[in-house]
Amino acid sequence: MKWFWIFSCLPTFVIALDYEVRFIGLADQDALETVLETSQLVSMQHRPPASINGLRYRIASDIPLLIQALHAYAYYEAEITSRIEFIENSARVDLLINPGPQFSLRSYDVYSGDCKHLAYIAHCCPLSPEQLGLKLGSPALSSGIINAELNVLHELARCGHPLAYIDKRRVEVDMSDHSVKADSCVQEGPFATFGPITYFGIQDINPRFIQRKISWKEGCTYDTDLIQETQERLLKTELFSAVFISHGDTVDEHGNLPIKMRITEAKHKKIALGAFYATINGFGGNAVWTHRNIRGMGEILSIKAEYAQRSYAGNITYKKPDFLRFDQTYKALVDMAHENIHPYHALMFRFANYIERPEPPYTFFSAGLKVDHIVVTNSATNGSYTLIGLPLFGKYEKAENPLDPKEGYTFAYSVTPYQSLLHGDIHFAKQRFTGTCYIPLFPNKRVTLALRLQAGSIAGTKQKNVPMPKLFFGGSEDELRGYKYQTVSPLRGKRPLGGRSAIFTSVELRIRLMESFGIVPFADFGTVSLSAAPQFDEKWFKSVGLGLRYFGFFGPLRFDVGFPLNRRKGIDSSFQIYASVGQSF
Image 1 (cartoon, rainbow, N blue to C red):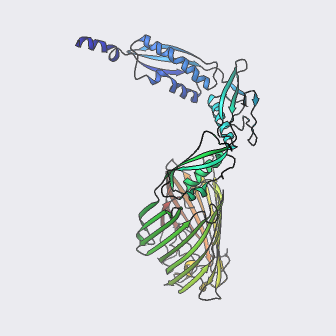
Image 2: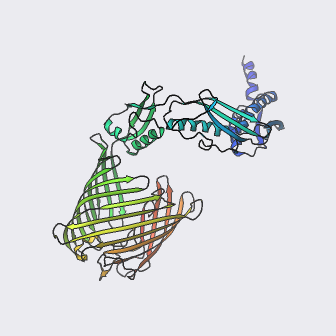
Image 3: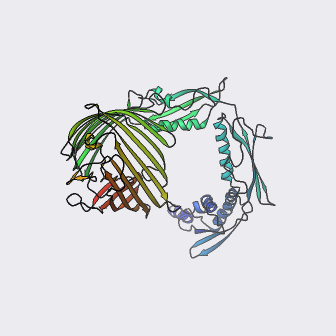
């Protein structure tokens, strides 16, 4: 029995005929990849046949499957022959493919009902080939026809027919002129409106919060775009890790289609701890506690504390989404901060309220009311100030990817009128404009010219009545890189006075050398003046530098070194280093 068992295994383990496969003659890379995925000769290569006859049988079984795969790529005259060559103890199989001409799509029509009349659905877009993603005269790929049928169902679902289905498909191949005529027959089903919603998976979130995010009203025409918009609204809140919306299989007697919403809630509380080092403040750390679902209505409460060797700050922020109207946020905050920098020492308290509203797709507005109490010491202008302000802000952003924009532009404008609560005759307005532009220099967008202009003004009172932290200074990662932090302004000796107006410009050439690394040579220019209007004849400060970028999945890591070209003795170092996440602007 032992010898018989060993002998019976020999055909499998000892006499198996190893082989390799080559596909010759097919230049269409997409079709070739499909052929390789379809071929049993390839998929079963690790299980070689026991004999040459077994190999021939495998080849004969493979060729019809490969012909069918080539038909899917519109090669309807394709022919495949094979040959076998023996090399030492193995075989080489060559499949010689003659694909013939690739047939083109001559026409595509959509029929409805009895499949005798062209489909026409009221309130739906025309079901033309172009609308469905097909181009007549292009290769008649099976995948293109199938995608067109999916687009038919999508278009019908957008205009009240979510229960539609493809009933039949007809493909006619004309061998004489190498063309294909394709038709699909759709059963559009009943006209449907949005019916009642049943929720699944709700735990800590009030259903009323979800209802505010729903894009439709019960009884409205069913539209799959509104389904997608609702999913995006809910996921954007970060309260849900998954949102799945489906519908029933039948409509009721009123044409209403019941809706099912299955959600999975995300974690609503989080704690974040961090450590940092800055040349201005030294070593430090911060802690943030956030609850994103106060009272079950998606309201956010955040508490942040930060402490460093030369500064400390604290902040409590409350946000209420959909305040008075959809997508409008009410924000209230209380914060305090202590700054110990070269121009001044300041202890600042702020109580503020804001209403924030985006106007999709490009615009954002906010308006608020705030009270600032500021105590300034060790500066050119010491004092205690209590101000009430009305901050207004608007932004138009048409630039892709905020962390790494390569094309587009952005304009932002802010103005805040202030009134002193201690001195009724002191009032002023601070305004600031920022414009950025991103110009790709090559089609692959691996080299981008980035430009930024910033201009600011404080008008309405003398400079001595404006707290130092409200004045303009240059010298930071945003303005005039390379100069000592917040020191570029008119001086009294070596003491910065600040300014009531300023102009800053930046030019960067962002070069992506490799997928993960890039360099950014840059130049900054700026001037700060004591007058309320920017003065172009004042001294202009200039700096140049070089940055390195590492591109991770979260965005670019930035490391810049700036060199001041108008270095001031006893104030500026020979260079400054900046590091952060994202491009500088």
